Image (cartoon, rainbow, N blue to C red; front, side, top):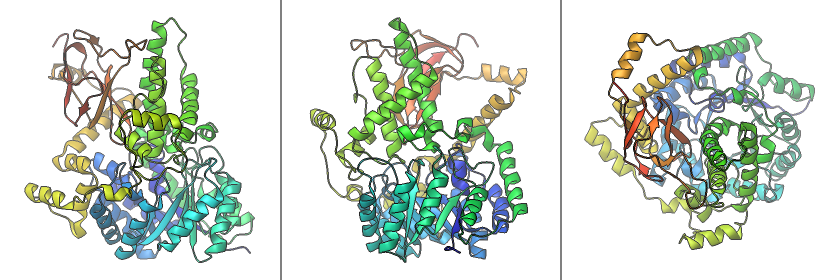
Length: 591
């Protein structure tokens, strides 16, 4: 019999790759004992990435959820692990050193054993400090290689990075195939290369199913020395998520590996509970497209979990481009044609901005550059015209060293715009911030929480945490949930409720997030690249008024409230707004 293979369940990542929200604390508490009873998992992913943000957005305390989910696994010796974005920790933009260091103390105290530390650029300078802090806090630092397919991402490239991370104290290596586009042969060779040099190092493979290569990749890495495989369970396995434990176990067992058996009664119970959570409320926020595998992902290299937000972003740009085409008397693009154009544009942009692995946040940056290029090209303005500070930060080196060479066009454009490149260690560019957050908590009379976990939450997710504390997050979530349920199940609003909404004062169009404002683009030439809404313009109820690009890259649609006539524009095209700022005022046609 071949070596023993362990299985890890990425239960929370199943939801992250499928929809917008996570199971509630009470739901995680219900599913945990069933996962344990399945008997096949030596590890479970309990936290990381955007999980805590979505808890806050739903009005739930993420610290309580993490503690509750970890506790039963801790008690039976199943290791818990989390996803950590290195320089960005648990969010989409850089985090100060003192907040990053506190993270490991808090998460270890909450019951998380292993931290999977990655940098979207595979820059070891963004990972090594976290390895040190994790070790000091008593956690197992699992350093990560973000896998992609490009001319620069070779076995030698990845092996050299692994050597540096292991020398810095990493006791495990994760091959993070976030888009599932890693070629099986390369993954097998890479696994063998690391194991030959570092036989004591545990290697864990994390691969999404999106384009359909994951099972072949699992077989290759296991045959070359991999120790742990990330898996999922129905009804959220496959699609853009992960392979199902049953299929993975069957394949490896047939290959002769020593794999644990699955308690099928418990599997079916976990399956039933997961479907119950979907039917209860989580399914309202699951994009049906994320349940489908697509070989189209091989061409663009974008992670499958991003497809839902990408399609939402594309919709607004699609409408604007078709408006331009109509004004020119040209045939409009279908959704499929637009999607192919976006994929082709990503393929054009990606090598020119240095082949950053397409994982958060760099997948969002590359996708957003491509989206904006499609729009500005339709306007006759060319490419790389609309790029925000986050996109430029990646290009200029503020997030780390890009794997490939920047195109001369991009370098020249940066110099033309007065942009300065840097090779500074990214984390040295960010001042410490905990003292300021301590002051804010003291002024508000907020408790720091057990093991300073509430202080950490404010420092990590300040905007979302403040909304959680003042109750706005819960109110907004319940409104979103009602809207989603009405859309999914058919409106159940009574005439009385409709009348109540119609008579409510709702003429200020308010930004739901901090970000940059983009109105619908109506321009058809370079001379008229964009026409902002005009005073007197009429909007139907619920019609899109504008979009706000949030700091994490997503374009958030802002509706025109109850409709009516535009009487004032408070924020111009490209203007920066905070959550709650007024963008415009619409006078209703009648009360």
